[in-house]
Length: 450
Ligand code: S3P
Image 1 (cartoon, rainbow, N blue to C red):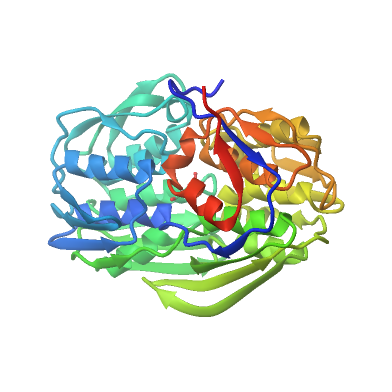
Image 2: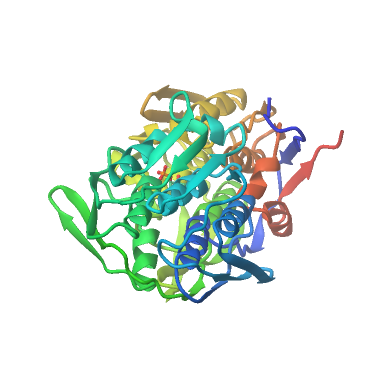
């Protein structure tokens, strides 16, 4: 069951070599943050390269509901006239964040220290996901939240009228929770401190600094200590969003497993808090090079050149790498199926609370495609079948999860028999041009009519 009223079943079949340049869209994490910080600053923020996926469009709508003027100038170019820190207005309607955990958690943080009330909801996937991980730290500022059992959406949040600053040690490696606390800290007096025992993506810290906030980051024996000085005046900026390494992962990994392929993906973020997949692929023996390293929009980027790699070896990914590739485990599991030997992914229990339980979704889907897997609460093990040994021939449930759908479509490009996903609709949340981009490279992916 896809969970969508209008599922879009899709099929991928064994393809000839993938060739060409894959210009993947803007980074989803950075796109959300650019809209939110634009809305919290004074003046006009201009954003180029914004990802126009549904998740980000829902955050744009949320920022309008809180009083910012958000305008799409031309495709990918947006402007945001902000209301300033503490300037959010009370939304007149329920805020629907669709499929996006990042959207709802960051926006909840951004409103938590302003004396307004807002009600949040999402789709069936988002309404199953835990929100206590943000409402608990936001309560320390003085905010309140009332939701369904287990801290689930729909949920009404009441911002603190007299917020106090907070010192918070993250109980799980989550950039969303870290960011919610930092965004709440913007409108609290004094210093808000977040300590993350394991480093997670640092786009919020980078961008806060870019918008003029005072933020210090120190690596200590406790972990990374981030100190934000509250109540700054954020100043509108021009933001150039780099391409999304999590989207780049799909054409890169497809090229690795489809014989004869050679693909270039230009301008992909090489931020060390995001590049664990590429490190892992190189360890597996992937023919992957990083060309023209440079800085774009405050993020390190490089052009990725990838060639079919028929001798991939299984590897172990250590728990301390998990955060830097948390969204890439589904597609890594696919690559692992085409490798020789076992790939062991450790420290991955956060995958259980993503858009779907991604350990379960990958394990069941891979088994249906003839691949042996083992799993525990915190580990996924894939027994590789070798470059030509994956059977395929199954219909896999995408479970309202874009990355599950794209991963199995990539698997179908190199499997012996075609692979179907019951619903490719969720792909539009993060990678709306996935189908034409993959077709342009030579991939055989089609929608199944009726
Ligand atoms: C994100 C953080 C990660 C990631 C998500 C995007 C972000 O989630 O899985 O897709 O933009 O901050 P967690 O914070 O739950 O680890």
